[in-house]
Length: 251
Length: 303
Image (cartoon, rainbow over all chains, first blue to last red; front, side, top):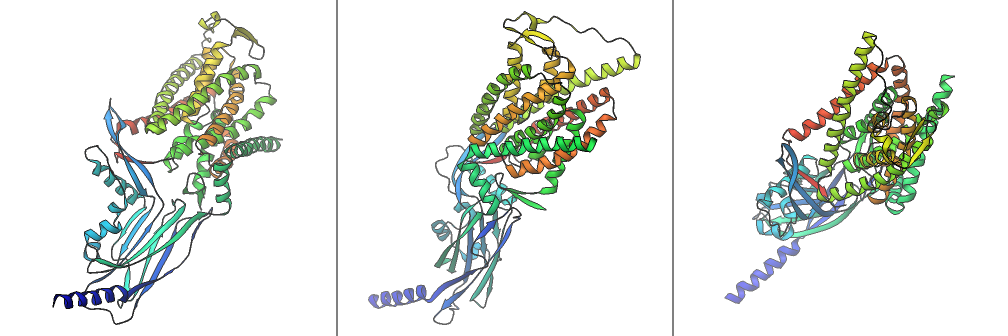
């Protein structure tokens, strides 16, 4: 009897896992930062591939996350000293994404269990890694980090922003702000059933400076001396030309 | 029209930057100052990261100073010899300034230092200039004689005396070098040419004739700012060429308008206006330190 139950569970279990798969499309494969870059929209769309009709006994959810390159961050807090406001305490966050958007087909609490969030690091507080801070109230600092970046449009929680049609087609639009940093933006799509992740699809959207922006940035970092001299030459020539034009106008 | 700045990594309205350049250009044309003390705070205000604002202002000062210096060279009001002595001190000073800047950046106190420097020096210079020019204006109205200039100060007693022909001075090289170091340090930290400190120091401390002061100060500021630009470019990679270019174009046009406005005003009136402007910037920045900030927390990324 017990063996039969186990077999049944295995069959259903593996069937459920193989049954639904994510198929994905992107409106653009990469984001190019040009001189006139003023933010960008990315349309992420896809479908759930199934061999059999969609199960009706469980709640389905789609969660999409887009994450910019992560880097260590220092969060500082001002305190009043001698009458003026000065940076005092600081907390080092080991790794925080420069950009993070999480969109769900329903409020995340309904389609994602805490344990799964912990495992896949889906919500913003989980995506930020901060260990071993000795300072009391370190949580206030990570909260501040999230609050400030959310204020700049860099951290976004998009509840109900994934449109799910007939349990099969889904799409969402992620707005990338203009103050974007370069790097590979990890894009993850999770399919959940009753809050448990049953399929995950990963892809990367590269965000790169192109053209003049690329050239100047590379020059500044790879040949700083030439870059500095070039800036000075431009400044000196511009100053000299201004003076010459001014003289000519006077005459 | 939004433009993405490659080094600052923010997108800013190009016309806003042209406008800032233009505004500062008008003021520098009117008052004969580089305008660095205005441009850096304004750049903070539009959201340029402080490190980029400081480094790029230094680059922009090179341009406006070259432009202004040309006119002074024609009028032979530049003491190149004195300028070179000031420069020796200035280069040493900017090296110290950039090192201090980088060290404090690590500690997270650079914003405080830059702000404090601005408040203290703008406050002192603004107040002194206001008092002095109000006195001069009152004297001019009363029509009384000018008070005689003191010829011998403690400066005359120092060794290593050198003859500065254009300035008509025979003084020790130590005070000019010290003035140069001091202004260089400020240039490195504040991203300013330091003209607003250098000019009073040359007149009151070194006793140089007023007519050669501006040209000489410009001459030395070009090289100190150029050196500061190079230091920031090679150690911090924070000079934004696109930003500098936009500020330049605005500044060049503004300076022409400013010079024309300035030509129609009396010297004392100009100095009072400049003093009030300097004090206004000082008060604005000072208030920022004293009033509780909207957000006590701030973020700094490594590098």
